[in-house]
Image (cartoon, rainbow, N blue to C red; front, side, top):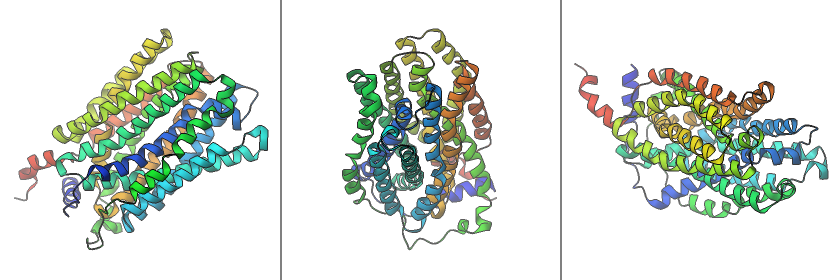
Length: 441
């Protein structure tokens, strides 16, 4: 039954997709890049934002409050995924992507303009949390429609490559946020960084909103009214996909913990290793550049060799290497070691990211693809992405053990490995090779 579900989901893409153009792909990617730039910039400036909106007698208390507000944005991701993701299945991918991008622009502009606690008191953290939640709502609805669009517009033998562009642009966002942070941290004093430096970093993203809106307005639609409703939209039809959803959730949970633990490397370098702010942002740039270069490679390899090998091998390797990596960081607190360890972990972690996303997308029928993918992804991100940095910071403060992020990543990666072993192959090239074995006798 599982094999039949996967083959049917793949054949569900039977309608001929519109011819992909650079402008169409760029329209999706610019929105994706902006969404993650602004969402991640908050994480990179968590310490400064904490002192602005959540003053405390201890630096750890202020940071934890800031990270808790960061996590609050994740609470709205499943809501945004349900509302905007289902909109992508009912009205089309294009209007869903336009709405999510517009809401993200409003949220980012609002947060960057919110006065400090010293200026307006308790209203400051209330507004900060509200805008974070709006960001979460918008970003929760971004992934499903945009991933479905990229897969549906791609040639079948290039789905991994096209979907990998999602993660490539996310890492481009990491690079841009890291460069902006590095420039600001070297040109401004610590006091200036606290007062307005982080606002400049967030505000730069707002400048792209009008251009992104114009580009997304030109998108073609990949969901059409004349397509028949799939049986999978009924309760009975959805039942075979419950296993798919559970396994996908476990794999995404593992990848999410790893991604957000690596994103925390900026704050970790400053608060745990006692390194300079510029060193932390340098590690962020390394993280983004290596991830950006690795993502399309992983996508191409998944198109050629299948999704499952590209998910399994890097995840298992990462589980073996993170503890030695954090040991090196804690014992040799130099920029060279920080950048080297960050780069190697990033390459291994990113190699299988595209395979995970495209495999889940391929498993889902067209008529529920946007909403189902959005909800599965958002639940994994909201629960594990929203909690990872807070939990890591809390455990570091509680135990004083600099290996805490490594242990957390080992546990998450181990769970993901087990789930990957239980998943089926979905790559068209592998399904075609197995077609005789799947054909009825």
